[in-house]
Length: 432
Image: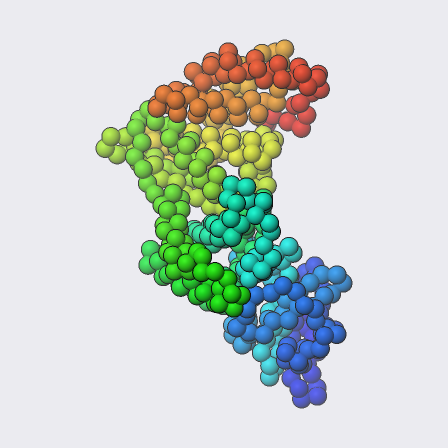
């Protein structure tokens, strides 16, 4: 925290609350309203429509957004944005808040590089060739916009955050491997809860639908764009797509005793949607077991760190995710069989001893130097899932391993011979 000396001229005092690693911003004319700041201090950047005055400043080559808010709202937004960042939510980075006696306070955020407000997406569209699957670029853009907003709402609601003002104007977008990633800019109305009720989620989605429809209508009128897609129809699709995604993330299903492969299939679908599974629960039910999953969005590097912490295994990101999914599934089965909770550390130890080690020890000695153990294990459980899908029943690790050793491993070994004799196991330390 940086406290500026109180002003002795009668214009009011200043107090700066700043996070480390950023400028102190003391050289800016804080005793003036933002709309009175001169071009000497401000720069023009792509920005959306705001209810409050927002100015952008360049300090030492870094861009920052300064937004005026009433004191209570400014302090609240600063705290909410900080917590959202700590919870790994997709928000702009909050830097600090300037408390000004006699004037509105100012929340400072770091400008999100390579981002665009939704208006700029439409006025600076790329050629249609960027979306080969859909030759109509505007249709492809709308689809990506819909996906981004749906995913953003679901991520917030899983974390227990009620936005209360979801709109296209309160969101920034970045291109992400052909898709769009959405980031929150404005959280004045946001609220944290331990868990959102269905009513709270429904209300948040309804607000989003109304605001998105209105935003598209305004944009089409201002820019003279064709009314396609229809804003009302588009907003209805947002609600429908959210309901489908939420059901995929949270629904309970009954699986048969020999259908453990369906657990793997569920985990894969969630991974493809960008979510990870924190916990799997299997409960006895008529005709099988009731499957519940607890999902969340993990930060970058989470899987590698978590696998190392639990097992001592070093792996790449996708390998770690695959192994953790198998460990989660294994733990759920242990709990279902014993009828009581199994500590994660105990499940990890047993999984290493009863599953992972057995697979790794089956690698022929002449191939041990060529094949990375965690990659072999990943391929075995991939093969197990494939066989189970084909047969409609769980084939078990023993049969999958036997099939892998006779049909898949020889091909992998041949590929390694083509690549040469280099040791691909570098960086793997096993466990201890």
